[in-house]
Image (cartoon, rainbow, N blue to C red):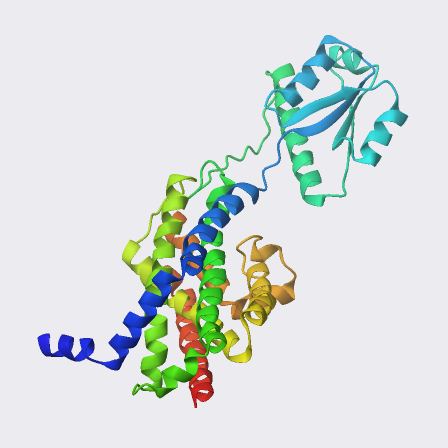
Length: 375
């Protein structure tokens, strides 16, 4: 071991690695890129990418103007799922408010509402929902159905229960906290952007400053030059994984139920994939500006079809099959499995195997392209 350590410390690889580390430490912009954007992106996406909809604007046309009708409006607004935007006295005005987007839903309570309830007859109310935003409209409809169902039970608690009464139990996320779904996906999203951009910028910077020619003059092999550039970046990006897990736990209280060591090993595989993409971008780009533009052309489709933001199951059939060729999709599935479900490689071996294949293939191609560029 001492002889091996002396051999490494006296090798060209070590000298180039030390040079790269010093260069990175002097590059305040790169250090800022590795720390600040991942933290901000996790916070923004974790809070903003929430499908939960609250405080939907509701306009009310209450022809009955009775105690029960007022209780119905109160039931709709007591949990602040709906807020009364105002009362109107005309169906034309209410329809116009929905048409103009001033309110999300309009509630029309008929004049015979109280009388039909007193006669134990069905009292119908009309609800107008703005369906332009299909997601919000569907959620609003679901909220209305649940609240009206509870209101019915409150009015007639002795009603005969249904023959089939399902009781749902939610595993892994009992509180249905949306950030628990999004944050593991955002971790993969951040690693994709940072690893590809940082690695490509580091290689292209050598072209811009003219130091790539100086590296070719050193008595070092091609693999030593490339490895010396990749190892410091790899270690810094592994630090981003630690940072992302810390933010997800401290800010969003996302649990970690899996094996930490195996998760870091799988994350290391995915970082290799991201670095490989960055090197490929650097070999086909002539400047840092071109690298950034090309990376957005590559990274945005990867992110959109990965399931990090929207479930893969909600996509058209073509994109579901195309997602199999997306390394980010496999890493997001692994991250959610480790963090939320506590499963391991035995349950996620298909995703781990796919990620390993992507790492080997992309790293092989990127190294070949880089060596041909050096030659």
